[in-house]
Image (cartoon, rainbow, N blue to C red; front, side):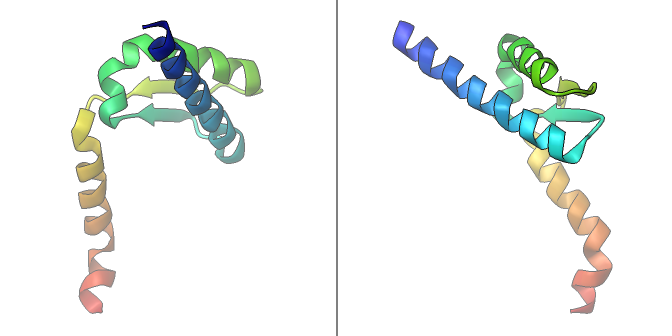
Length: 90
């Protein structure tokens, strides 16, 4: 079990550093994590927040979506609705 925990913690560390890179490049006010990650966010969110605070020189909120697995579908529908004029003209 210790090996599994070590692998999961290493994956969270990589995810945290990827979020740090995105935040530094894009300077968003909020980073929203969703999908399958949001189901166990209570466990790993403090680790990500700690890493972001350590490496990012400004405040960025990290939170979990309340949409769970539906966030991808809702985002796709939103994109379609915003771009429908362009898509329909083709």
